[in-house]
Amino acid sequence: MPGRGCRDFSSRAEQLPSLAAIDVVERLLLQALKNTAGRAQRTACGDMTPEALDEANETLVDWLAATFSGRNPHFQSAEDWNPRGLAQYMREMMPESLQTAAPEKGARLDDDEEVIHLAAGIFLSDVYATLHALASRGCPFDGIENADPCVRLVGFWSQLLVGAPIFDSARD
Image 1 (tube, rainbow, N blue to C red):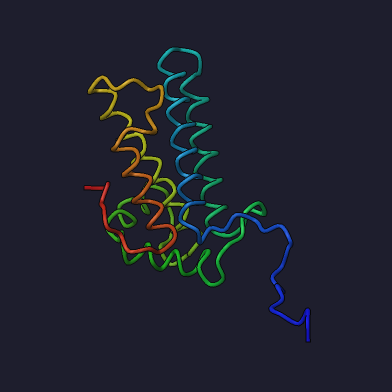
Image 2 (cartoon, rainbow, N blue to C red):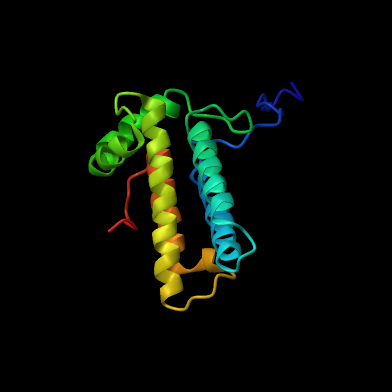
């Protein structure tokens, strides 16, 4: 019968950006790095106080932790990944870093959301270490997010946060 061909039954509903999609996570982390670099530059120029920078850093870490724990309503979390699967993957992939950070923050490594919060703090520390290394080589902060070390860092963390095999370690 005519008109009885294949039909498209897929949903036309608007979907939230998925935390299981590496491109979504890359854009999110790249923006976090870019914003962090901007705040660091404003602080170095005296346009932002160190206290305001610390507060912004805490806010970013809290936001990243909530997002990757599946508590950000603007993102779709992956079933059984955010937070449980992700926290377990982090425990396997970065046990030394988590064990070092946990006592400093008074965090428990058996709590999935605390593990993700610790990892968000480690990400921010990695961002600052990368920015410091680039600045010490005279790299201008304008467009610094496109510098190869920043791209590698974002790639590494994106792979980690979606559970992809890690091919390039930006955390030597």
